[in-house]
Length: 83
Image 1 (tube, one colour):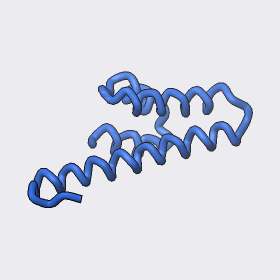
Image 2 (cartoon, helix red, strand yellow):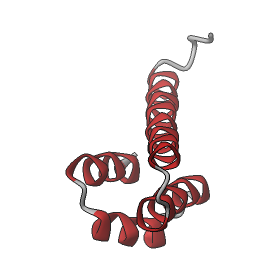
Image 3 (cartoon, one colour):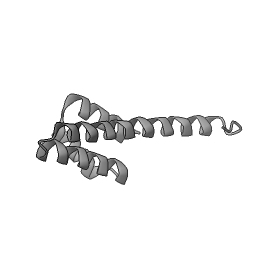
Image 4 (cartoon, helix red, strand yellow):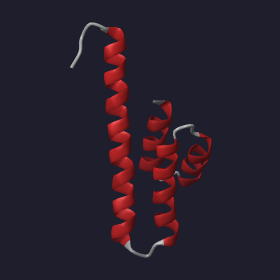
C-alpha cells in the first residue's frame, strides 16, 4: 500500500525522479510497468493524448490497487464476512 501512496503523491507533485526510483525499487511488477509506460510517454512522446492515456491508466491502476488492499484489510479484520 505504501508504494501506491508514494506513486500517487509523486505523480500529483510531478516528482518524476522519485517516481523513477519507486519504479525500480517496488516489488509490484504491474505498478512498475505502469510507471514505466507513463514516464516513457511523458519524456519521449509528442502526442499529448498518449501521455494523458498513460497517466489515466496509472491513476486507474492506483485507485484499483488501493480499493483491493482496503477490502483485504476488511476481510482480515472480520473473517466471517464474505462478499
